[in-house]
Length: 626
Image (cartoon, rainbow, N blue to C red; front, side):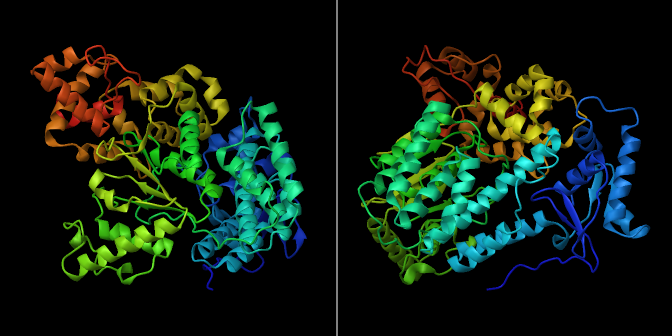
């Protein structure tokens, strides 16, 4: 097994550690790091290695309440001390900590900082697991965990800024520990993880994945009574602290252990796989959607519905919800969870041969059709079967093999970003216990029977929580009115709220009220919703391309009506210059496409108040010139 290349530290370089107390060592000897404020500056720079850190962030870390007039001059002194640590006095130290318009940037190699080494080992371990090399994965993940010496930066957590960075580091460590423990259990070595899991559960009692791994490790070690007691303690804790029951996945794990002794282990389940042509548009942790997530877990957990469609406009968080549910349902689907994107990176639909080939590769479906001709070649995209003659035969053979695999396994298949019904009809299980979770912008009304979950805009509270995760709770509390204006100007669209947060996290000098004013300007709002390579306009444009030409024209006419909070059927007929029946068909066509929302409860077509999401309406204005 080959490992990724490691950037080693130069001879005589200082080695810094954040995974525990902040330390610096040279040739095995610990170095003094100076007074507390100097250590806070160093910790903040190291927690964002090779990335510009704004002066405002450093100032907030050192003086969160009332920075002195000399704050910038003092920071220069502390940064100078960091340069001295990183290299001999002179040019080398200056090259390692540089100042520019983005703030201070600390250049550091993987071999000089434990968090960089930790991340490299964790990625290598997960890659090994994805290849099926569980022994290699366990070794690499354990090597990463050996760098973890305790709560990160535990000596500086009285600074809110450093505490926030430390919390992110600890979450990463916990996730890697869970990966390692689950891998050891899959390898049939549960005993090695038991004690560590117990200690971590005591420190993080509400972290469900940790507790599930502890239950599993006890159960597979033959300690069934203790495993069941772990669940009972968790159930009581959830009820007492949150007024909730454990998740369906956790309850299913508990039921599977009741009345059973230690059983032979199943083969390692297929790992969740993500198409390389599907870069994530969002980066924040999953937020909100408690009702929809609960419904999704209940429906898929009980096994009564084999196909679920989650629909919503581009940027509504459909993929994030689907992947969160798939993660929580791990124990319900012992033969694995896989995700395949049904579109290419440019938004065009992949043909069935491409999708079947990827499903076959991910799930180990055998057959001559595992590589159907040139099925993955864009040149074959015109044919839904991926070509002619032998290619069609290969695709048909793989389709049959895929159906046979689903009939014999209990797995969850996530078909992500489905453009239309035809793209997935031949992929759905006709028998067996596999379930399929589909995400789509449109309603896919032609699929039946399915369970449908439509994602509305985020509620104000959920949107504010998402924004606060990105810009910091303190900044949110400083001007809650402006923060509320921002999320409402985003129309409660998760992608837009997150892009706003990412933008504000970089532009720390920008008052929330000023940014809210920018978003309120309908002529410039979409220009403001860009962060790096993530653009709300680009995502909305992709959804716009899904609409038929006639639907685009109708949406352009209706977008103006929606600015006042919604429109009735009578107003739609007037704006479209058509009769009642034609207006009903036009509006309902846009509802089916996910471009217009309607009331959740039953109401007559004339009494209903229809809405166009604000940002989609702004884009329609741009394109149709209304």
